[in-house]
Length: 452
Image 1 (tube, helix red, strand yellow):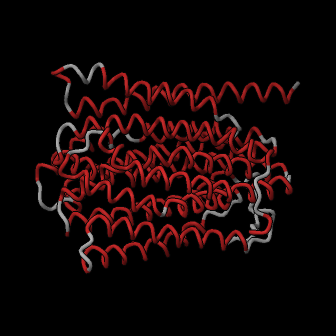
Image 2: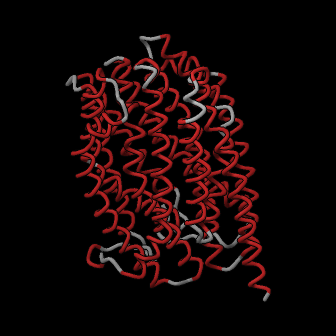
Image 3: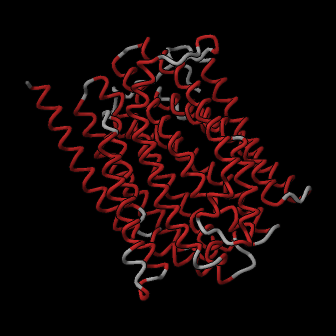
């Protein structure tokens, strides 16, 4: 684990990007493996209804959490800009503003999540046979959400400083504990989805403790001290300027997913179980592609702070090629082995597996388009433009999907799951092309300013 910041503004880009990204990919995959363990344990010992209950909460949890997770992106970019420009005092204040901000966000989410879980699930049309289990899972999950916020903000700071290995190590420790607690709570204590949620909350607390300890042991301007913890106005404003649009984008993105989940709910609990299992498998592909997006943010951020526009352009080219290859290879492989993979999650319903295969055919194969879109978004945020990708994503992804659901999907002959899933592919493609054009325009404008 590095105790000093690593410069992303020097050295060969391709090698640096690959070595920087691999630990992020492994971190994300491990996280999903541990999350998948939740569904596998529930599916094998509690049944498909419990799988559907856990799956039904995903879109709601993302809706509530993404707004505040976006602020961690603001902290990440702010630290990267400060490190690239050599502004040590600014970085130190950003770090000590980020942690109390994470604590405040966590408390707000805990209150909202515990008190409003059932109401939100009911609004989504969650079937009566799983809404009780889904509510229990969400309430316990949000009981540990403050620790999750601290971990996400802390991990963002470490990655902005060039350290992608520490979050990987922390996740390995907390994830193993999560799996062991899953087995104990579900198999030994027969706690069903409540046991899975309690195991997750416990592992989040462990992750938070580990990331804070790592920040406190650093030897650079990213070192954290509880005595210096204070919300600095200028640093908070910058975090909000970059992070709030990212959070709004994530939340509105989740709103479209909530509406889609509600549409899936209309096909019944069996379809929900198949959809939940397929979504979990897709997550492994998504997290690998999204890791490249995180790399794009931090490399663009540090090089933007250092004024190295040429390295920013090369970062775009490398990350775009990287994410395209990742999406094609992993997406194709996932679909090829779709049936046995779904069988890991679902053991009591062949019909649910068939529903899962339908989703994988329409989403997993063209998933590389989502990766391209995320890289373009990351590059824009890295150069300090957060409002523009928010607007483009709201219109190109959220707006399009909502319009699709209330127009095309409402037509009786098109009221099918394949038609619903098709909205993903179209929205990814359009949003990527627009964001890429905006990024190239902004880079040309910055280049002209430098020449002038």
